[in-house]
Image (cartoon, rainbow over all chains, first blue to last red):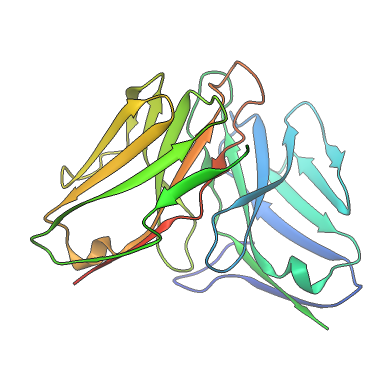
Length: 113
Length: 116
């Protein structure tokens, strides 16, 4: 979701529940999307990616959905675990020779045991 | 080896100091990046090097000076910084876009900089 000011959107779930983290993007030319996970004190870590010619991609416990019509991306985490607690960023790029990966605002996921 | 190594992990400097941040990768990536990240904010791109040449400078103030001495190393030289430059500085590397898995950046753990 979108954040206002300095506040990071937050999502709090119970261990074992499924989590859905949303992201809106604005660049119609974006053709490659990535979800990153950033734990406290660490650099962003790749989770899963998707190209614009797809609308769904699954990994281990994670699924990314892309809706190009409304420029919306979501990350679904199945059976959320305490180790999933982190800030999750979506990122997008125009692809081709475009080096510029632009990050969304981020969502803080807290998993309660 | 899929690591990007950054040193130092923490750095405290005064506004008149000169210091450098260092980054190293051995994945054969020919694109390397510097990002700046403030607390509770997403990473913001500063510089991109492609084949050891500066290809993107996101209008970064000249008190930040990047250098890419070879394909494995990336430095960020710091001089006359301001307190508002305090942040986490992230280095990343990737394959050159168009030549593989486009866009996936591998990040280091970052150098946390405090300017007094």
